[in-house]
Length: 384
Image 1: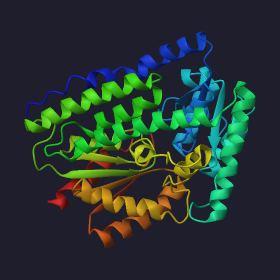
Image 2: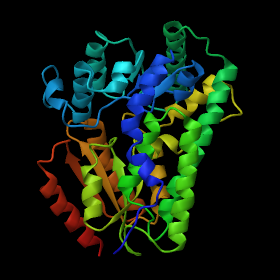
Image 3: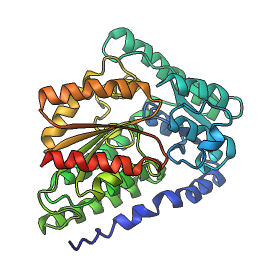
């Protein structure tokens, strides 16, 4: 089958490599940089402080050996990669960050942040155990307020209500654009690969001119819709449609997505923190700014929340809207919360939707690629 990628995707092939140079220019212009590891860190507050947020490197295998010199080998690969990048200065985004915002999404990261704080200005946001009770909401609001106070003190900026409201409007606009991009994956045939979708979503974390980024994504959407109208895409019409969920999967750790698509199935939705989870809901612009920001981020359906009913309910809607034929749940070795929740999600999906479910536990290495390929092929054959 002849398939030609739409032109604008080429821009996102180089967006991340070009971001390091762009960030250096911002530093030369005396712009402050705040590094983050997780979507729980409210970007509106960082922008309102006159700084730029940037995601920090955590998805490559190469620095893991350096991380293991300090951290236990049976730690999650994401944590070991994060720390390896940090202590070797191989991540330019960490190097250029004036401060780093961490979060207590798991015990491993909490302890890693203790070590990281010894050589980098770092603030850790404390998460409640859940998101449903009034006590949870009050606890998280207090944590967001502490982050705001920390950035004001460290960056020497007053974070006003007007600044936060402007940042809310900007990021809500961006979220709506990303939601429209995801809508293109409802087409049949699918107009781009899940690997390319990941590349676009991932690039957003390393682009500092947000209006330019949104313009590029809007142009991409136009091209994808045109391709869809012409029946063009990387997979034939009727290809099996797979929703990928689970742990954050970024550029460098996307091997399972690649294997699925090499086997002939289309990854139509990425339901994880590095995918659409961060763009799925907006900040309520009718509420007081700080409270509205806290509310939006607390409702992130991460497996660290117990119970995590929002994830279950959202998955039902995703399956219906994207006409999924199957679910693939990726879990990193050592990530106990996602590993346990995989069983909960599987039971929920099979009970509510009757959909086949494949659980894959892996790490960043290539040693299990053929084993995973065999399991994926068998799963797709089961779908018919």
